[in-house]
Image (cartoon, rainbow, N blue to C red; front, side, top):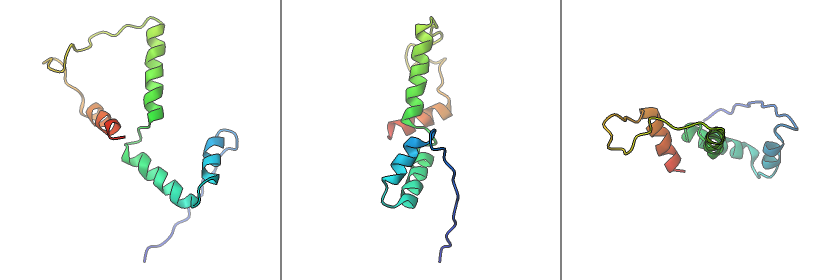
Length: 96
């Protein structure tokens, strides 16, 4: 028989207001937390919020005059090799 473990978590009423509101709406809070953690782990920790933030950061840099250099013209470029961790992250993102 599996044993239960109780894990205490503290949240800030201001900074974590969104989490507390969501948690209060859940019928089974423990199950909702477990599901959320498993979902996060399954995506390698990458969230749509992470992707959005990265896009916004890039947009801000481009607006401030940054330029992209050394961008491959096509995937057939022999000089370009996608790092395995980047490929895995993009694959995980595509499965969302």
